[in-house]
Length: 251
Image: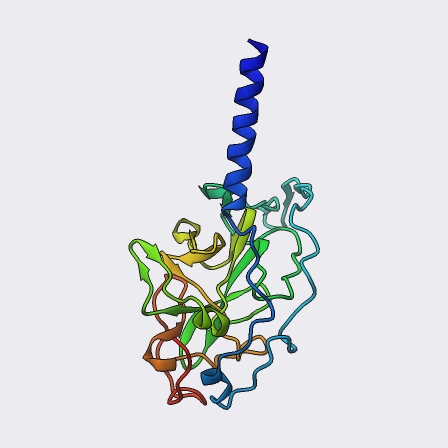
């Protein structure tokens, strides 16, 4: 009986390790050469430029104490209520990744590397006069979708040189995703061929663009008529003329 219990325990542990290894345990290469097609685009290629921030400081944030609600009578006799600070709750789970109901109540330092992925991912929204509202990461870096991908089912078709020019936003196990301004129910991930896990919005895999050097850059918008900053609902933002709109790059 004891031997059987130990056997079950070992099998369970191996299965758990296998599941962890399947989600982001293999970091994407960080020193891949930039494709020639991108080098010729005339864009400032600076993947380690001012838009890059320090390494992720921590992923398992200590729970914050909730502030009790207080009520005080006003001059008119009505009650003014200070609502308790609400901690984000888990809105959805996809295997070993938790998607929360809103932004984290703790400060999160976005990872410096756009290729290694992290265990804690922030998704925010940004307004632009030309293209409208689009999604960024926690550092304000633009996230794109690719028309050659599919969302039903989620599938990425950007690999090799394409993934060098358009690094996927990766979440590593055990992962946490904090969306702000995006419905958590449409946030998830798709497993890539190399075993890494790419964040999705409404099933669409999301990417960075190597020529975006800082927050707010939109150098990949409209490239080849297939790459667009992704909207909070997973849709495409409006195309707009830009420095690279008529130039080619790797698909």
